Each structure stands twice: as structure tokens, then as C-alpha cells.
Image (cartoon, rainbow over all chains, first blue to last red; front, top):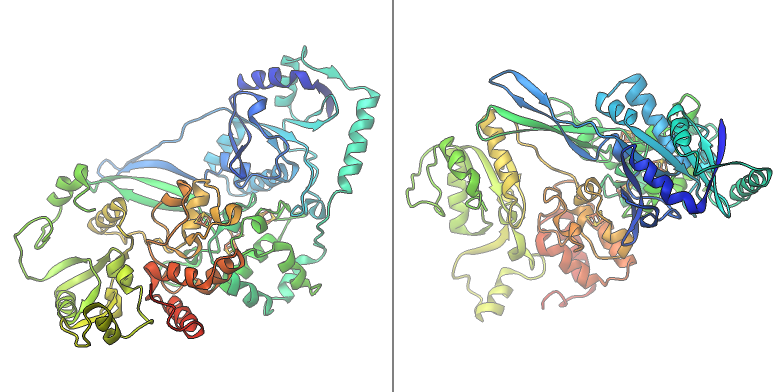
Amino acid sequence: MKYVKLPKENLDAFVENLKTHGKVYGPVKIGEYYSFQEINNSKEMSLEYSRTMIPPKKFFLKLKERLFTFNEEKGEYKETLEEEKIVVFGIHPCDINALKLMDKIYIDETPDKYYKMRRENAVIVGYGCHPDEYCFCHSLGTNYAADGFDLFLHELKDGFFVRVGSDKGNAIVSEISELIKDVEGSDIEEFRAAERKREKEYTLELNIRGITDMLALAYESEVWKEYADKCFGCGSCNLVCPTCRCYDVVDNVNLNLKSGERLRRLDSCMLRKHGLVAGGLNFRPTRIERLRNRFNCKGSLREDTLNCVGCGRCTVYCPSQIDYVEVLKKVRGEL
Amino acid sequence: MILNLEDELLDLLSNLDVKSFIMASSAHEETDLDVAFVEGSVSTEEGLERLKDIRKRSKILIAIGDCAVWGCVQAMRNQEMSMKERMRKVYDKEENFYDVLEPKGLSAYVDVDLEIPGCPIDKIEFLNAVLSLLHGDLPEVKDYPVCVECKLNEYQCLLVEKGMPCLGPIIVAGCNALCPGLGVDCIGCRGPIRDETNAAEELNVLKEKGYDEKYIKNRLKFFGANFGEIAKLSKMLEKKQPGKGGK
Ligand code: SF4
Ligand code: SF4
Ligand code: SF4
Ligand code: SF4
């Protein structure tokens, strides 16, 4: 990996350069929450943000979109998606690691061409963060992004320690050679000290060792009923999760009854219809089953990691304050 | 709302053979129907007879609007006082002059094939349902809470972030989270989700946020008084604070 330094005063010039690579999006404060929005300069961003409600996954697997229009009479369909180059600035390590999980699914295993195209058209600029009381990414090993980005900025006193993570990132760095410097020994020391300090800032722990077994053994546990009684089945936990990948499609026909459009939106296994199949059978009719399914999906192993990156969103945005970590501690019998 | 489909109405009607649409035309024929769209709650014996007759004549019966689905605001005082008491309060007499029934939605009395909720209904939801039927598909039934639409629109959560008494978690989606999108908490005009809504938890959550029980009860009952669990909660709270149900 290549390392360079971006002095603070050059941040805006850097953002200007990024604009030549696509529309630039960054974390913006709106009311009491954060959202990735298009930005013109660095001052519009809140780089000290905790987490956005909707993760940057939204740029690749859209919250809702039209996939194509169709015409039954002519027997044809027309895809309506547009290619667009974008730069997503300021993504935290957990969300970068979540995108890597999504890539495994929608690029490697069951390719989704819309997802893939958008990923290829995006520049990912990571940004170092500090945990709050809901973050438990360090328990999952996702608090550091070793790869999965083009550039990654770590804040220093007078600039940013920049890790260059891809050819794309390298190309950008070579375009802005007059804005950057070589890293010096003192920068490296400052970066290392900051990382050491950050490791100690975590207050929330989740023991994930053997969690898949623990979940299997808790299949009949009372814990599911306890939380299902509190749960609204509102889907917020899934819709804000950076690793949830389920979607649903619906067709709308036009007034001529011949043409129409196919829409897709993110789905959630906490919603009743997620388990509904043709013929009217629902294999998860109750909230108990749905809640258990959600935790089992999150807690199942994908290669070396779980389907959860410890971002804390599902706990923060649950209207019923169902605490993800607390549920899993009960599953294990720790609480 | 249906008549407000100005741009689509003529094309839509050209696909249909309308036998009766009293709000739009005086032509009216009492005959067998493929589809009957029924609005309004059942609140008199006469209305109930009429509903049963329509049910008999129709292959598909669709309830449109909150009145027809849940009974709407006129059901708000259900479970709190008897019909007699209500007559006494309003007319100062106990006799039931108009054969009034406790207001309820259609499904309390007859089989309903599809419900299009809302006070008022969303005209595009109605249009899509009709077009699906004409096309030979099952209309899309939204049976998930408004919160889903908040998330899909990336609207700030008013309940979580601002502590506002939002009913979104227990109210059926389909409005595209209109109110939360404008910064206004959901008052539940589309009604609860049949066999799904967790009203008891809404009561807990709002109590925890500092709202008092009577306020929450009225809020829940405004559009959802006939929903089983809300009715149960209402009875329970009524026992705790008798007589405080009225204005
Ligand atoms: S399950 Fe919860 S904590 Fe884990 S990645 Fe999803 S939203 Fe974040
Ligand atoms: S099944 Fe549930 S938890 Fe798993 S990805 Fe889908 S929505 Fe997320
Ligand atoms: S966000 Fe909370 S209330 Fe909503 S479905 Fe998830 S666990 Fe249930
Ligand atoms: S604002 Fe209301 S409807 Fe929207 S997510 Fe929050 S609780 Fe749900």
C-alpha cells in the first residue's frame, strides 16, 4: 500500500479534483441525523459524524428504483437505469467492510448487474472515525478497513494520513501530486498513536465466538418471544443495515393495460410478506419466527466474518429500542 | 379522491362498465357486479342490509377508505359507552331513532376481498389496484408499517430522533410516509395493519417518551378503535380511569 499526506488546507482542492471523477457525496447533517448527500465543498460535510441512518449501500443497491419499462404487446422491455460516475467521500470502516460483504453476494455469488455497474462507477474515499456507545465493530474485526476503498483518510493534526487502496486511488493521487506530500516519520507516529488510542475508545463488546452454534442452540429460546412482543415488525432494523441485501419487486401496469414498469425496493425479513410464497403459504408467519430469522441471518458465517459489521444502526433506529447486542448476549446466556 | 384522478379518469372509465357510481353519475343499476367498491362504515341497520345485498351481487368486494376498513373516527368512542348512553348524550333520549349500530368496517359483517385504506385513500393506490385487476393480477397489498416508507425515502425518524408521538410503527404504509416527510408525526389515518399491528408496544413506547395514557389512547383510537388490540387496550385503560374517555 502507498501512503501520502494531504495537508488540511488542501482538502477543498482535493474535493475539487474528486468532482472530475463524478458527483461527490459526503456525510451531511440534516436536522438530528446524518445522510450521504451531494456536496460542493468540504465545509458542507460533517466529517465528525457518528453514522448515517441509511448506509452508503444506497448508492449501489438503491432504496427504491425503476428497473425497466415493459410492453407486452411488443414483447419488449427497456432498462431505464443510467450510468453515473460518483465519488462517495467519508465512508467509515464498518461501512466499507459491509460493502465488501455486499460485493461477495451481488458481484461474486449471484451477480446483480445494476449493483455491479454502480460499484464500478464509484470512487470510495474512506474516513477514520471514533466509536460511540452503539459501535461494536471492533468485536467483529470491521473497525479497520484493510481494503475495499480507493483512498482512505485518517485525520492528523495538520492534515490527513492517506492510504491509497487501488489503481483508481493511485491515479487520483498522481493527478493531485501538487496537493500532497510524502509522509514523514512524525506523521506515521501520529497515525499509529491515534489508532492505538482509538482501539481503547470502544465501550461496547459482543462476543461472537461460536455465535452460529449459540444461535442454533437457542432456537427454542424464550428470548425470541420476549423481543417479538416488543417488536413492531417495522423493518427499520433491516432497512438501515449496511449488510442486508433483500429486495422486492412490483409491476405497475399503465392505463392501456399493455405497458408498465417494474419497480424494486429494499425489503426486510421483519415484514410479514417476506416469507410469503406462491399459494399463500408463509413460512415465517409470526414476529417470533421473523426476529429469529433476522438474527440467524446476521449471525451466520460468510467465510471468516458474520453478516454484521457492528455499526449499531439497527439498535439506534429501532422504534422499540430493541438492542441488538443485548439480544445476542441473551442468546448466549450472558444476560 | 377517485374523481380527482382527472388525468386518468376517462381512460380508466373506458376500460370499465360502471353500473353505479352515485357520486359521479345519477345512472344507477342494481345488478350483478364483477367488482364492488364500497366506502363508508356500517353504522345503521339499513346500511348493513344494503352491504349484504351488494356482497351477494358481487364477485369481488373491495372496501375503500378508512370508514369501510375500520370504521374511522366515528368509531372513536366504541368500547367507552353503550349506544344508549351515546343517544342520551347527543339527543337526550335513550331510544335508538335511526337504528344506529356501533360504527364498524365492512369486514366486521361480510367477507371483504381487498381493503384500500386511508382517510382519504391515495388515488394512485386505488388506480393501481384497479389496473392490476383489469390486467388479471392480484393488486399489491401493503401490509407493512409507514416506517418502511420513511426509510426508503430517507426521512428522519421523528419518534427516535425527536421523541414525537409518531404512530408510524403500527400504521399501514401506502402514503409514502407523507406526514413524516413533512416533519409531522403520523396520526394513523391509514389505520392499523390487520393481524399484525403491535399496539401494546406503541402504548409502552409513547409512555416511556412521557406521553400520558389518555392522550395515547385517544390517539390510537382516532382511526383504529375497532382494531382488536386497540379495543382491548382501550377497555383496559377505561377500567383504570373510568369516565375519562369522553371529552
Ligand atoms: S445487524 Fe445491526 S449492527 Fe450489524 S451491520 Fe446490521 S445494522 Fe449494523
Ligand atoms: S434475510 Fe433479513 S437479515 Fe438477512 S439480509 Fe434479508 S433482510 Fe437482512
Ligand atoms: S426496528 Fe425494531 S421494532 Fe422494527 S422490526 Fe426491527 S426489531 Fe422490530
Ligand atoms: S417517523 Fe414515524 S413512521 Fe417514520 S420511521 Fe419514525 S416512527 Fe416510523
